[in-house]
Image (cartoon, rainbow, N blue to C red; front, side, top):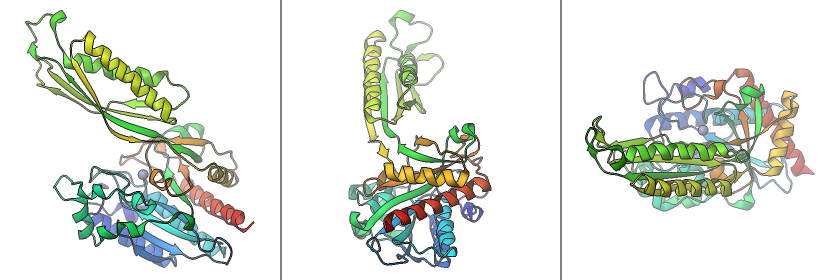
Length: 407
Ligand SMILES: [Zn+2]
């Protein structure tokens, strides 16, 4: 199933499947076929999410509630095969296994294959899970892709009705929780020699743009003491961000400058302008904000010591999304039974659909070991054994939830 999905791509020889494209359509149709074969009733919602539903298998107080299980089938450009896709496949296999064992669940189940987790095509992310969670902002319908196509028009071309997105929001009392299997996308499980982990939280994140204005000058004639070098100031601030993050030992704080532009950009001209991105993430929102304030102070200092003008702008901020403690425990004990080893609790530094779903309901995640922690890369790899363990842990988690609901 992973191979079949990986074969659906915009590009020959590599996996690229962006939101609301013909490739997304083909992958959604394939997942829909699998869902139908597994006995689920299938529909596509107005955000392009495939939803496969199974009603409760027996009467009781939770019979009208649904457990949501999901992940995403969109990918980055030149992606790996497991990111997102594994979670949808694992959810499907878990439901098939439960049916094969004749388990009658006391609640319904909706399997969700989201289409926009990566946020590559449009400058927005988590569109499909935000719609399901009821937190979608209709203003983002005006966002455009690189070809100037709005999200609204792309949805209509996909067969969705943007005016009815609100109708596709789940309502809180009808939902039991949200579960997701996902590759770790980091190296911790491999280092610990463990196949699975229970996720404790998804890191809070902010993104900033730093602009530095100096003054262009002749590389040969302007003495060092009289320069307004925007790039040298940027270099100092890049290292300041790194030092601030390295000092933190408790909050999994990470700071990254991954993009920098310099003008005019000639070997014999002092840089007049530098602009760089700053991405800060942490397990604790206060620690993350404090780190940003510290960076701002460093920026203000560079202002005076380096005779440049530094501007810092925040373009995105998402708070920490905590996994529900009860689900963390249920998942942890399920992993323990399946693997025979204690399950670690890992924080996710990467964003996931659970961030949106956490606004709707309790959520829990199972992380799966991936080779060398490599992800967003065609070299992404997960062993069949580890994938099997993840499916078993998901089955065990659902069985435990069923037992808790029947109590
Ligand atoms: Zn993903």
